[in-house]
Length: 402
Image (cartoon, rainbow, N blue to C red; front, side, top):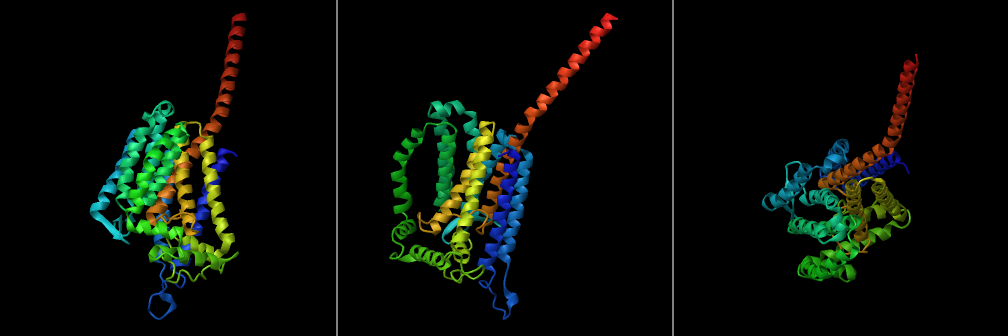
């Protein structure tokens, strides 16, 4: 597949997912579920839809700016530093000016919008890790140095994210960094050793020492007999999925969203998709994300430069991990984590950062397009120069003969 076609395919998939997301947000928040008590049908509010559409527009502009700047700009140290400092600064600021929602202080209130620094941290991790791993390529393959430095950086940024009670984002960032380190050429047993030494302690202190996470784990193991919000949440999700059957009950006809299913427009919007569009619709959404991941990996495979390849890998893994983890949470395949479904769930920070990562992929795709066209142009130029040299020599010899 040509580099130019991959770029077109990337944006086509993103547009389809974003449009579908707006439809589902309308279905879960405006169509008979948020009627204002004014005594007439005009009381239906479209506030969620409008805010999400504005966030998508902002994200699209950011994506085009990143694509327009080019991937080479992301190689510059001052750009990397600016992104990292912005992420760390916002993570520190959220503990001072943060807004608490559902017991978690994860958002900075900026008036009309709420900024979630954990989303910015994912973007910063991709940019910084690609920059570092491309600079110490040989050390990554031959020594611990190239691996330990990004692990220390990850520990810092992940620790700040964890303090906002967002373990899901920490898991996503861990998966992303591991994938980037492996694709950078590090021996797999480096990460195996780190995982074996750290996972048991981290698992114990982050899950079994925190009551609500422990309840989520118990609900995951036996949702039908688990007490508390975690078990109720999963049971309502299963009921919604089962009600959808093969083809669903129809768009806008979900009953689970009528105050039965919590977080129906954010973390568990995929359950509403399953109910309204059935198994066919759910598999269609999964296929779109699978094709998006495949497109991102093809863009990475065509990259002629290690830095470009790592940027594409990191961006793709963030989007793919978050999408499929969200869907697996909804169907009960993995423990519940607060992760949105990219481009579909309601959430301004999430959709803006996801589109920014698409901008990074687009920048890499544009570099691939230029790389594929440059050799042909250089060959044409070389042929023209050779013909000119021949003509000059012939004229010189002819002039000398006369």
